[in-house]
Image (tube, rainbow, N blue to C red; front, side, top):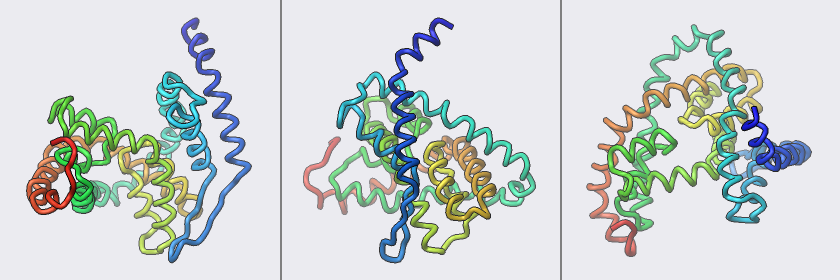
Length: 272
């Protein structure tokens, strides 16, 4: 009990600031605007995230690095009630999950398609073997562990994975909220398909995406949350095996095939 009280005292600044940011974000409310053929919807959670990033040690410096690390561990605590709600929704709609089972499993193969875009871009930007680690997955905690296991902690591939992990931690949630809103505005995909696609293997990113979609499609809100949570869970389970046996070998092959063609067009490179 004493240790808990000591920790609360140390993290009191984080709790109070978080409360103020939530209040400010809620006062701002939801903002939407048209961008070309798409509509961007900005939700209070996005404003809170942006303000929190600005207060970090690398920008305004309101929070020190130690406080930032402490705050990162609280994300799981904050998102746990939401994950519990997803579990309850999934249990109450088990028949729908069974009916959509093949689609939920096969969507993991769809995640591989991003490599065909990201690897050429990375090579044109001058990246070398970091490209493999950076582009084979969304690069969350499990993927970071997998890269260390496969390539080693000091390898260029692991540096690539770690780089995307950090970037995803900073802007991933905001990006997923934007992307969900933009995809919904196109009317090209069914709301349930978008909800399923929200399960990318990151609880916070999935929460941002499904919350955005639920606001846009309130009549599908429960199903969107259910499918997003189930998809995220399956991605976490199957992602390691998909990464080890399919994604990493495919990324290596694409790198070896494209690097002689695209790598020579870039200036210099990193990780040579």
